Length: 354
Image 1 (cartoon, rainbow, N blue to C red):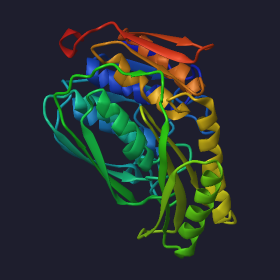
Image 2 (cartoon, rainbow, N blue to C red; image 1 turned 120 degrees about the horizontal axis):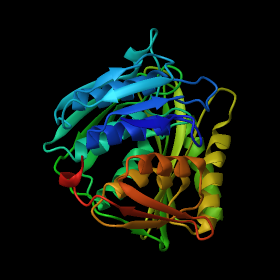
Image 3 (tube, one colour; image 1 turned 90 degrees about the vertical axis):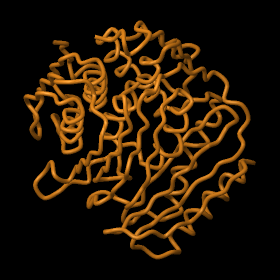
């Protein structure tokens, strides 16, 4: 059994998600202690508990410690990952419901299902665009397109927007099985082609997305960037607002967003997302801070080496690298001067894995 200290590094949910993914893929039993010890409310929240149950479902794992706020988990896979049709609902993990991010569940099971023998379809319910988690739009516009270059064949469709605190969102993930992953080389992003995006509200007046889009386009055009942002008014179970921007470079993609809240003007929401984008644009690296740690896992599972230059070396990145190395799948080197991440897989094919 591989023992993982959940308090290592940034001490958040990434340790749990990566450990679950790799346990399902390798068949290795794991024990994680001090789960999310670095958070204000440590232990398993609804979205983490749902991720545990999702990972267990796809490999028929025996689990101990799968309860809200549990800081210890034992996870023993019972079979190879089973492709199929699944439904996972974050709101079911806590009495009274939850807006916990369904994208965190998606991240946990995506690569195990991509390496399974057959195709899968997964219906996910919960928060789709909530604070402190990757928005589903980022998964659609940045992560999956980059992962597809590595051999991950998957798509996700947004059926209903789910904001904090009500949740109620839904997405359908489709994964083609039987993939062989290839390494990625992203050292030069090339020229910026355009910034595209959406300014979205549900159950709010249409002038709000119009104002977000207008303000963002003005800021980015003042910086001499090509920009196209569409205002959208969607239906949802509760009011919500946000702007989601994708910087499309010749060789890479990067994503930036901001969520609305009460007493925060629409223009300010747009400014927050634009500020992040312009800061990234000045750094010339091809990989944004979120994609930096998300690329580690597919790179470690690839059949060839990867290297990419990051805008920022975060504790999410260094922590995720440490977790992957506990499984002995790859050697990961992070050059803090050049900000280059290099991943050398130690196991060349799924057939070689334990």
